[in-house]
Length: 414
Ligand code: ATP
Ligand code: MG
Image (tube, rainbow, N blue to C red):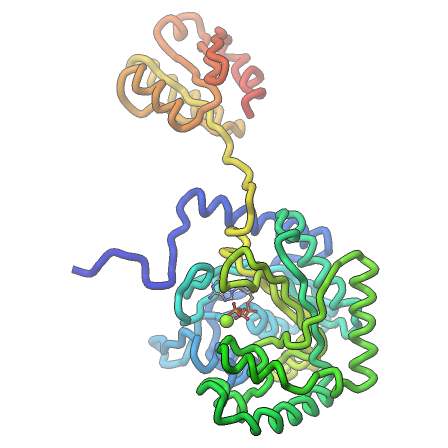
C-alpha cells in the first residue's frame, strides 16, 4: 500500500493555516490596491522555455530546481518556480505592451525541487508585485515601498531588515563580472564544487554562496562599487534618496545579488533572523532585460516576491474566524423549522451552525465547543409562540425573541 502522506516538501493547509495564509494574501491585496496594483493570475504551468530562456540555463532554479514534465501532447512543460516569467509571457502574448506602465499584484503556488526544511518547501506560495514599463528609479522606490507597507500592515516589518544593493547597468555588470572571474580564478581550487561551476557560468552567484569556505573567499572579492559607471551610480543614488525620503530604513549590502540572470540595477531583500536559516522574506529587483530576452518589446521592469509560508510564520496576530450562532432544535418538528431558520439566517449573512444530532445537552456542548457566541433554542413552547429562546453563551443570559425580530436581535453577535 502506498503511504498516505503528503508528497515530500508539500503541506496541507488545514483551517488555522489557511486562515493565516488568507490573512497574508488579503493584506497584500488591500495594500497593493492602495498603490494602484491590479491583481492578475497566470497559469501554474508554462512551456519550459518560458523559464529556461529567462531565468538562464545556469541559474539554480533552471539547472536543479524545476519540476519539468512532458504532457500527453509531447511538449515540455514546467510547474512555475516563480511568478515573473509568466507575467512577462502574458505581457507579450496578450499584447499588453501597448498599455504601459502595468502594475500587477499576484499570489499563488510555486514549485521548486529543493531540500525541504522549515520555511523551505517544494510547493510553496508567494505574493508578488511587478511594475512594468517604468525605467526610472522612482519605480524601484514605489515597488520597495509597497513591499515595506505590506510587511508593516502584517506587523512584521519590525522583524526585518531591508538590504539594498545595485548590480549596475549592463556594461557595469559585465565589467564587474570580469573582475570577479579574475579574482575567483586565483582561488579556484579552494572554491566549493558548486561555485567552481558558477565561475564559468554565473560568477555573480558565488557572492551568494552559503558554503562556509566560499564565504571566506567572497569576503576578499573586489567591490562592485569600483565597477559602477556614472549612470549606474546616479540611478542608485536616486533609489536611495527616494527611500530615505519615505523614511524606509535600509542597509547597503554590497554582497547582495539576485540568483536570477535578468536582474540589473536595484536588488533588495527584506531579511529576518527570526526564521533560522531561511532568512529571506521578501526579495526582488529590477529586471529590464527580461521581456526582451523572451522575445518581446524591450520593457523595463521591477518587482518582488515574498514567501507566504515565511510571512505566516512571522505574523503574530491573525484575525479570528467569525464566531457562529448555533441553532439547537429540540424535537422533530423543531428540526425542520431549525433548518429553515438556518437557511434564512445564512442568506442574511450570519454564520450559523445547527446541531446535527443528540439531546439538548450534547447539542449545547457542541455549540460551546465550536465557540458559538449564542445559541438559539427551539422547542415546542417556542414553536407555539412563534419565538425562539436566544442564550448568550458568554453571559448565560436568555431572552425570548419573536421570530420576526430574530435577525435584528442577532446583529449584535455578528
Ligand atoms: P532562498 O535564498 O531562501 O532560496 P531565493 O533567492 O531562492 O530564496 P526568490 O526566488 O527570490 O528566493 O523568491 C522570493 C521569496 O520566496 C523568498 O524570499 C522566500 O520568502 C520565498 N521562497 C523561495 N523559495 C522558497 C521555498 N522553497 N519555500 C518557501 N519559500 C520560498
Ligand atoms: Mg532558492
